Length: 110
Image 1 (spheres, one colour):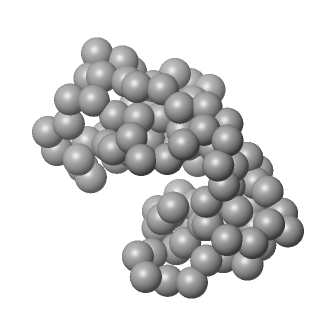
Image 2 (cartoon, rainbow, N blue to C red):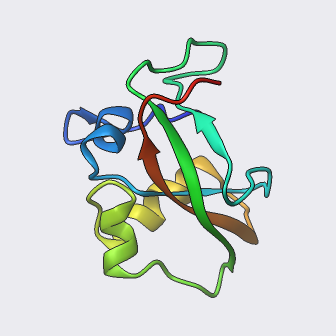
């Protein structure tokens, strides 16, 4: 799974391994609950050697759902307004998205 973002000079990928980022929102439903995935800083890059993430939960959201304060924090320390603005700049005309909750799993290989 690719995490190329940054918040206040700190990379999302580092925030994942520090436990500060535990959620991600994506337009496609391609990741399965219970499976682990490599963490990559960009497409075609090697997986981060610090570990993998395990998907704990997955649920759908639509444009009528606004992210909560807790969920915005779990996305990397944002306010709801900051996060929604960021998401809307990346995905201009979205109508639904998938939320993935995850945890870091150490010592597991691909």
